[in-house]
Image (cartoon, rainbow, N blue to C red; front, top):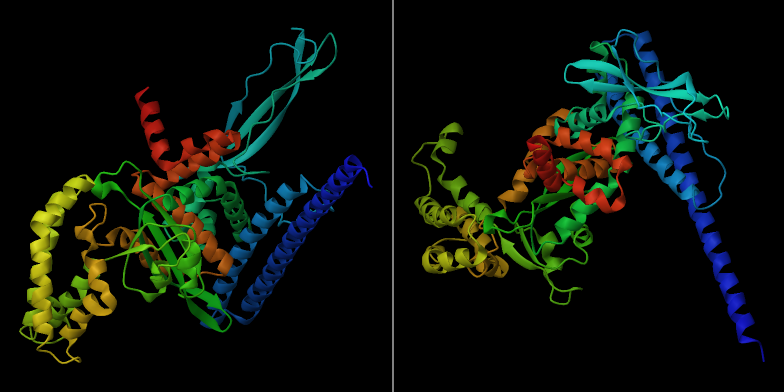
Length: 542
């Protein structure tokens, strides 16, 4: 019979060996992914240079070649950012497991222009020797780290000086520690990084256009250099995004919607999707701050909302898109999601048939409108009037007011729509608008607002969150890759959440990037937009 203690020791040793092998394999995988990303970025960089040389040789008249170069620049931007993310991930994993050294070949960065003003920030020097405590120290030199920073319409280079002192007694050198940078190996200041991020994702200015504008201002920053900073910022801001995601998915009620996004694909573009889930408890006086979570997908299959909301249960306010239907199944784990449909979508279908100005714009006679659709719009507008009066009241007060004021109007609307529908053929456009509200038992989802004061009458919160993306599509044309789409969704989550909390996204990102490297994990929640806004107000008051 074997010794139990020896058997336990053997099993522990085997478990430790397995864990070590797993850590090594994970590190090697991260290393290989970083090498592949870097190689892809380098190949794309070389192809772009070849295309530019050919254009210079054969002339500038070819619009097709110019557009091809624009596409290649956008692809290079996404690959460079992805390579930086993978490199940082490989470095983090390599700290726990031994792997071969990885050094990424980066484009050589030009020195900062001499014409930029220099601002010296001298870190307080030690007064005593850090080794023996003697006060007999004298300055022997200094180390200067240059960081490129941007102030609106004014560029400057900040020189952070760390003076060195040597001790007359023990001959040891004393010097203050190096400051934290916003990014590892960072050469760009937090305000410049925030400007790059906000202009790309908040103002929809691709990096190639930013690089052209910076060059006109006397600072030559290549597309690859800017893309490298975008990827590094995405990795640095991951803790903030994770907290926003947890906050959004901790809600009992969410607004959900999606919009189209062109995705660059072989032979052209394909229609991808950008999804948003918004937590906004302000209409029923909820105490939780608003926030938005975005996600990207190649198509609009129902698998995507299932993945986005896996493990979440609550009330989902959305349109009648069938891709959400799996969420409403009774046998769903951890439980079915409750559907609450949007009255704005229902009203829109009647309004399009009763829009006098729209008819005139299309060259149709103004009297050629549907009286039934016009009456439906007027009846629904009466319900909206009640909602405006009870907005921002608590859930109980909203439910009581709806029961007393809105329910009679809703029931009268239901009976009237049924009566009118019975007189129409199925091909009548108004009949299709009516069927939208009653098909597949949707009426119960439309009227759920009467029974729960937390539910809003519309899904406008999600549509407002997507409005900026819809306006920016014409500027950035398409997403360069799936990684690029995921990165855009990541940054939109941060920027839109800041806007929902009445916070300047650019100022917030600059402050977060400056403070995050020196912030303990337990204090990271203090950097979230709603806490940052309060802390900034307190600092200004002080």
